[in-house]
Image (cartoon, rainbow over all chains, first blue to last red; front, side):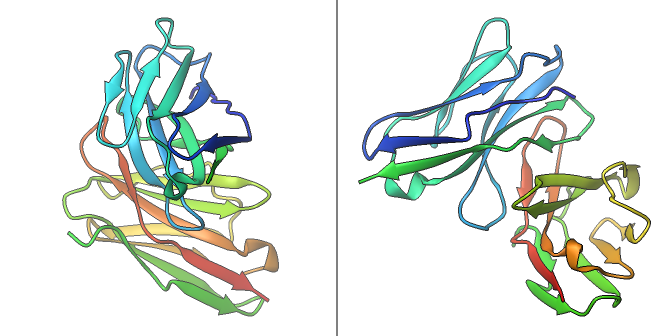
Length: 110
Length: 113
């Protein structure tokens, strides 16, 4: 299973884009990259995932480098409600083994 | 669908007592996960099932912990006997087809005194 590393914390001004990096240098060819966030002590909530192409949905965009060793989650217009812990993890296709790292605590400032 | 349902939401018990946490996954999901979250250790995967069969229990901390999935709509995580260091929030999650996201329950906050 690929190990992921993320900065422990980041701040972002409200209305600006939040760019959250994740390093997954040991990822293998069939491992997807997933992003979740956890607000307060609720259960983690899925945001987006991808294999090698960039992905976008209504919540965020995911940029995966060509060598797949790192990715960036982009929240295009951060709001105060985006303050949360953001987790990047990987899952070898079909194994269902979702391992979470320590995450990045994002604080959106008014 | 109501999502992944866990019960109870909060449990306070005395050291040495048996504790049973319950989880109902989303209907049609084939995989179920139990996680434990603490400030010190973060979100740890304890065990996961695929089609009701335990696939990997390497995260279960010790023999005091056991998990079952008697059918596709129900799973339990049991701690016997419980200890204060088991105090944590326990999450259950379920996944449908391969390469899709996990859906988490609201968690059970366990306090062992």
